[in-house]
Length: 129
Image 1 (cartoon, one colour):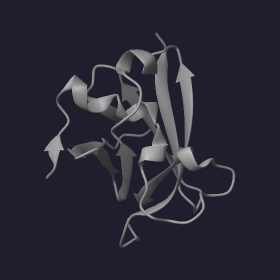
Image 2 (cartoon, rainbow, N blue to C red; image 1 turned 45 degrees about the vertical axis):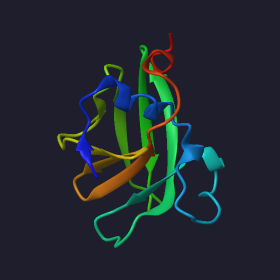
Image 3 (cartoon, rainbow, N blue to C red; image 1 turned 135 degrees about the horizontal axis):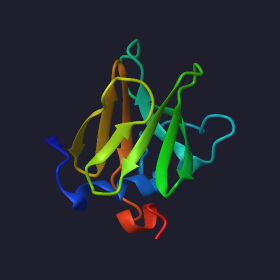
């Protein structure tokens, strides 16, 4: 069952990206990424999610940004919202749609979709406090 993100308790455990909680039974992580920095994702042309996207974290002026890289080289950037409302797209005009399903936050932007774990650090830790 999916539900929109609307509560601070839902989000920012997720973005700490203790990504090791997110597994879809895939093999080795993409080259250059540790096991805990890989999430399940899919592009518009993909039929199913696969654990194939690497995630890079950066803190800029106290805000956490996630760059998610697909195997074909394209990427999406997200800003983690410390108010618990989820993520927003950091580049471009397309808005992120998101839904929480169990311990997974599914984020869709255009034809791309991502599954982030909804466990990890609190919003205060993400904000660098």
